[in-house]
Length: 546
Image (cartoon, rainbow, N blue to C red; front, side, top):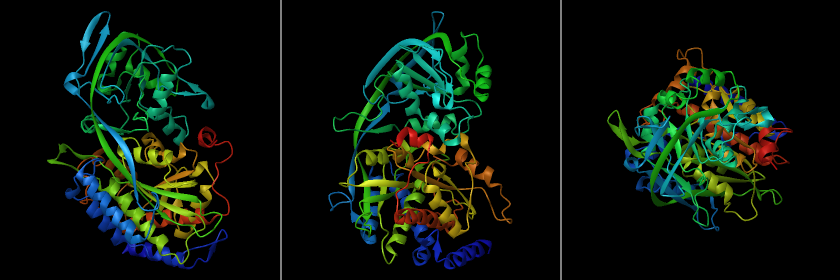
């Protein structure tokens, strides 16, 4: 009853609008959004029949073909040479040969051999199938060099020819999204490489609940991917790093055994946002063997052409990832990682966004791209490939909205628009939330570093203002569940497990709210006289907007 009342109030509010911030509200398009269509698409994409949709598998191909037919039914214009939706994404899959890969620590000449899966795991080496190194270890705190934020873990240490050891996080004193940026491994590894490091070991503080060690190990066994450039070189393969190690934080004390410092002291300094670095007075010998496989990945790209002759070559890009983890280690006697919420939901919502655009009597001034991308779970690969290899001649991307497991387990009263504070897109967020009577909330869990974990970040790195919208924790009075706890608990119990299937209490009216808010933001942006801009002095605008 309460859900219906909320929906009715929202629709009444919507219908009462004619102009907002100088733009008309497309009432009929919003009212055409169908929650049952979202449920239907999710049900198919997350069925066991599709075997978890890992890139390169039959299940992914089935999912992709289904979405392609939906593009046809929606009348989207093919973006690839005007006659195809399929953008090929060449991928290299790498799986560590565990039995042939070793890591030893040397303390005062005494060797200790660590156990694979128990103490550590390797990341695949995407440049060399066989790689080994022996070098001293140096601790570099978070591994962050951020002079613009008055922070530098490297200020008192020489890491040339050494293996850097770092915490898998960034200072809490940073802004939420800046913290997320400096937590990103690509940023950290490139900084270490610039300073001459030859390997990297990372581990988490005990309070980091982003993933359990068992989940990390399970995921590693499915391998990983990188996209290949025209020279068959893996993007972000980090050839200078002979080994990349993730250490079980339960055994981090081993690394500090000869340094004169305790792990507890290190964690306390990190909590206090103190830059820290020092030699560990031990060395490590590592050998990693990687098995390669070529995988022909693919994105799907459709276009809704704009109506303004001058602005139709500018594009608002919507993106959602189709892939998940396929078939892997069993959890509760289930080995199919269905990925219902992550991210059959986002793709289903994206199709309804396209449906809303097609319900307009006239298309917006700017053109709309609907992109269903691959490889997000393995490092935002499909969106990164798309952003670096635009399939449309003379296209100018002006904004991106990414849809990725936006959370709809309860009625939505507020949203968290990641990225809105960095650009003029905050104006369109305000417009859309006013129409839908939604509140805007700040990042509720900055420690989850959400801002760098979905496809919008691929566009930000190309200087394009972008948004990634999640629901907030506000609830109706009758809801006795503390959503700040239940939504976080979902991440530690269901996220990236086979239990992310359709046997969950999804609220499809709430899912429709995600369609509405993303559609309206994009619609208002596409009709604005000027393209979105970065805010003056913004961190990301300054780093990428040039």
